[in-house]
Amino acid sequence: MEDSVESLPRLGTPVLDFLNSLSLQSGALVVAIASAILSVLVARLRVTVARWTVAVTTPLVLAYSLYWLPVWLGDSPMEYRAWAPLFIVPWYVAGVMASVAAMLIVTRLVVHTAKNA
Image (tube, rainbow, N blue to C red; front, side, top):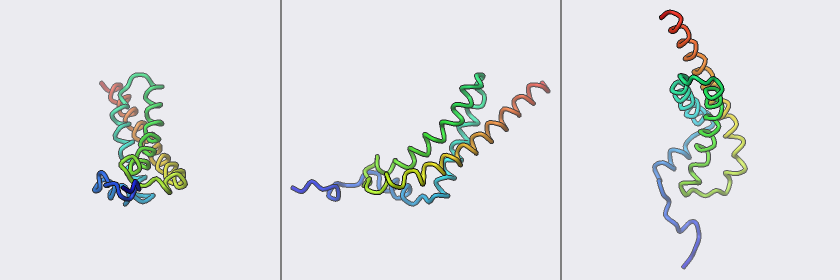
C-alpha cells in the first residue's frame, strides 16, 4: 500500500478550484469586501478601542485564512509557505483600507444621525 499524498482523495474540490483560481487582485477584492461588511456590522460597538481593533485585525484573519484554506482542505502545501507574504500582505492592506473606510463612513453617519435626532 502506497502512502503518498497523491493517492489520497482531494476534499472540497469545487472550493479548492475556486480558491486556487484567486489571483492577487481577486483575493484582495474578496478580503476587502468581507472586511468592509464586517466593519459595517461592528461599527455600532460603543467601545472605540474594540471597534478599531476589530476593524484592523479582521482583514489579517481573513487574508491569512483565505490564503491557507486550500492547504487546510487538502491541497499540497509545497509552495504555499514561500508565496505566503506575497499574497497575505497585499490582501491584508486591501482589507484594512476597505475596513477603515467603511468604519469611518458608518461612524460619521451614526454621529450625524445622533446629532440630528
